[in-house]
Length: 212
Image (cartoon, rainbow, N blue to C red; front, side, top):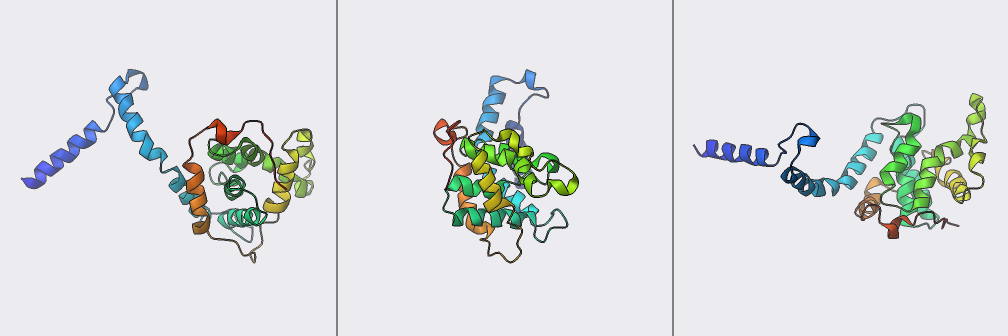
């Protein structure tokens, strides 16, 4: 009898924690207030989901390279930190290929959308365009235009994207490089993704601050 009462209570709780509609247009005020309440703890776990995806990149990775995609991200972030840049650039370097698993053909744009609400505009721009900037190192081997990035020559972020690729991305495939661990960078990811999304004070739209 006690077990039956507990199960009954559990079922009632689950029912009251679900919306009444099967089409969004039929939702009530109460439905959407419920979703608003439940969304907050879900959003608070974004950093945890990011870390989980990075771990997956250490298990399921693009074959042929001498290191995993996780190792590449860790190495890129380690190099960025060694250059003395701030947390936005470090996390941007760590996550610049986070889209490889789900969007391998446009991973740069995918990765940029992941970080866009939480880092400066310039960091998002660089991550969104690093794919075309990286082509300078290899495109000619496929008969492609290695100078395709020149279309952005007059953009205020051109030089910083070039430096991002040269210093942190293209050289971070070294299996002997002493990269820091995912556990080391996890607090930085948590800090960045705990920021208020799309805060103007964080985003600094169209401000190209750059780095040395």
